Image (cartoon, rainbow, N blue to C red):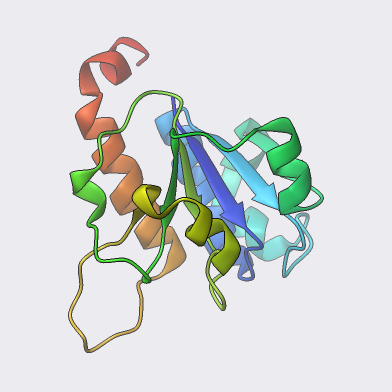
Length: 156
């Protein structure tokens, strides 16, 4: 239904949890290298439990390779703390690409600068810098599902 794109994820447990989320929402998971772990690492498999083999998984050698095969479009949305536009003000459609950056550095600035209208953030207090990657992915993915629930429900 949706495409989850993790740009250079660093923590295997987050990626495993997001993989599990993708299986349970019929979403495709795209991983952009370099990864901060080996995809076969025990922590990834443990977090994904017995779901890992069920993931519709695509691994890309670089962000450039990803964009070569998936040209930038208005259906790409970028989660970042570097905007004030809340994720729930966007209108999502089936097949959209929801991008999440590395736990340590986020989505590269040049990508965000090229698509400022497609940037989104999760509102939070000034007490923290950001939310956990897996939690952020779940929040935004389920908003997209909520907006497309009739179509989503038909696929269940």
